[in-house]
Amino acid sequence: QKEVEQNSGPLSVPEGAIASLNCTYSDRGSQSFFWYRQYSGKSPELIMFIYSNGDKEDGRFTAQLNKASQYVSLLIRDSQPSDSATYLCALAGQGNLIFGKGTKLSVKP
Amino acid sequence: GAGVSQSPSNKVTEKGKDVELRCDPISGHTALYWYRQSLGQGLEFLIYFQGNSAPDKSGLPSDRFSAERTGGSVSTLTIQRTQQEDSAVYLCASSLRLAGKLDTDTQYFGPGTRLTVL
Image (cartoon, rainbow over all chains, first blue to last red; front, side, top):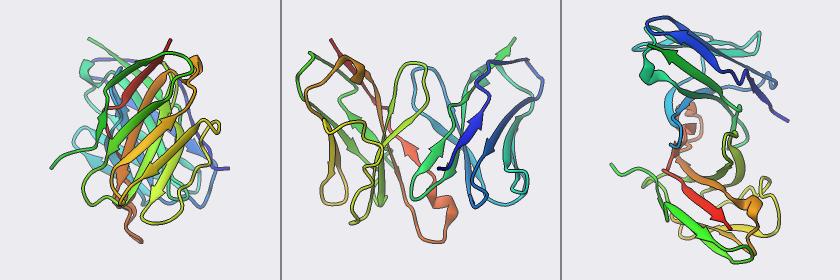
């Protein structure tokens, strides 16, 4: 049974700081990983995916994957109040995505 | 291009009635997924369709829930004899899912249908 674990938070950071969101997973054979953002009352939207060890940067977002340690993280630089949302980590399962329960991020002005 | 669409956006029904929720995936996407999200909770996988293969129904919570996908495109999720605990947002997603291309596992979500069972 593949599992994805996230700290539910809330994670509170001041505006302009770096927010660090972490996710661990149980299946060492997992190959691809996704970060979604979900605003309250809205559906999840993709931020980025990663499948190679190391860092992948897209604007203010950096995803980090460490397959040996079975964790994936998302860094948000220069955090803005508009980044306040729940961040969902997911990995590709047998045709499906296995989602974590999400970490709630609050960026304080 | 158009994203995933769902209808209705809101549905209020009485306990014991049947409801049908519709999902129209992104054109060309071979895979379609249904999830349920209760207030403040995570995503609960319900069912997954891939091309012409038999659907993965492993997430359906009871035999009151069923889904079909006609012509490899539009899908309908049916809940029979609704109960109050069925109240949730029902989300549909689709993905391209090409063999050997990991990024095509990315799922794109529709806006959801908020179901309220009185």
